[in-house]
Length: 519
Image (tube, rainbow, N blue to C red):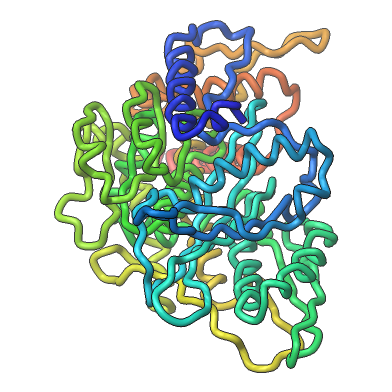
């Protein structure tokens, strides 16, 4: 992380200045230089130094962040009141690095700033953010805020887990266990997190069991299961489709595909983080390469002035700070909002080919077959917004099953499947012919993408204008660079391409057979 975080109260703003310089360099970089790999732009106050490779662990550390009132002032500041494992157990160099990371974490646990008031009621919520390292790799921050046990008015506190693993649902369930133990005693958190840290992270579809002792309940066995589709385990599309209609989602998707500046606004932090991760997931197999901040802290709100593409989540009370910006899409996720799109460029509904828009809408309709089974899938006009309520102790139980295969979670998985395959099919039909236009060379040299021939071969012709615009994006550029380097291509996307091409051949043969009968 940049050392400017140590520079007193002005540290975050200095980081912002440094970030703008990086964004400007990216903006003016000659993207036609295909021999060099473009680095990923990073977000302000998110950049951290490389940590030890702990990808085999569930998490790197857990911290509890509390709000402490400043002496002689009416404002609060976040402070870390608990951490596991302790920094004292780390090597000095690693400890120095993590101390810098912790300063950034404080900003994201309480992004609203210092103006808090003690509360007697507070609906807990779970959200996530991303820490981007200097080498472009990312660590995930998972946070749950709730009102601590006690009497009278008091400020909320936050639990934050830092992990290299992107699996929101799994960590949300881990927070249930942490919150349960916190209500008994802070000391009860340690043995559970120690057992979790020592457990191997399961492969997709597999389960790991954690034993944990709770007074008056005995030893519990907690089962944690990863979804089978690991590339979607950090995503839940329910919030996205509860906040926006299908047509509105397509307009957001169209703007994202062309790498524009997009700001999402909501009151709840959980809504912002879930929607931004869902929008980024719609791009699969491509990856958003620019600034991505699911929750922008108040002290960093000037990031909205950045001239380069970004996906930002901003709380609704900061609307006046972003409304003056132009050439962007501002999406209001608030239930009952008068205008979903506060600001737009105006062409969002015409970016995607008309026929493919219709096919996307038709595919998305399949998810509505499940809407009668649960209230979790619905558009914003028909449903109240979801809040996570504080944990209440369960009855005595020996086994707690935190498998994702419960009824509501199963519906979530079905929704993820329908939505992801709908948008994946869009990319298969628009750019799925790219493998035929990568000319392979001998001697292990990278292939060469024949971009002009690729564009001319786009079918139907109505899609060519979109393809010509899409190939100018950085996400497509880096995707093709990776294809050029890899002599063989495998994966879900390539499997879907093969299936689509095979279906086209069968359809063509069938049409020829029918014409023969007519003749």
